[in-house]
Image 1 (cartoon, rainbow, N blue to C red):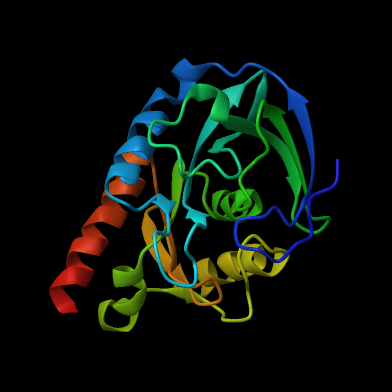
Image 2: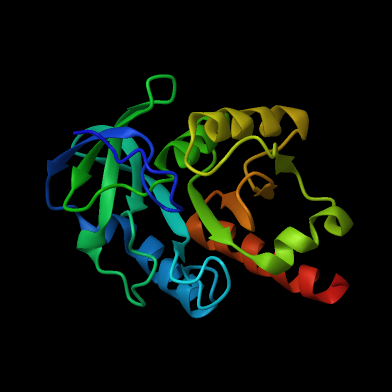
Length: 215
């Protein structure tokens, strides 16, 4: 199945195979809980005004073992507008290739446009258990004052170049199993990660608090 090659924000840029399957919600109930909390905090949602009005943003993922395979479950494409995201709006990424721009997923919904970005972060450290991708103007604008790591302006959302830039940032900034960075080529884009989704989410929320204090 081929992905839409449009440059519109949030549209999938990779090729993918989606195999219909029912996922075991109990394996990622914590991810579902935190995703909905982040929606309430407006770190996942839809732009209400400005040039990005109507565009949705934000996704979360968690490493799991399912169907005798190691992989990660991630929110589906174009689901950020849903306040309480149900289990069937997640999919399981069993296999992928950054070089070939390909993702193999199981579920009932297309994978998030940032699936390869999440995959790249997981590759950097086996202790990373969950990832949050958000858009946050405050964190993005306070990045220099807070000394946050970053990716190149040349790397746009959901692209092979961003996946590679994320890997490079881990080496450049000596990033570990818990952290946060901004994506300069993806306006207001932020990734946080940790050993679990609670850790990844709290890092994002704590950084937002710090950003508001310095702006």
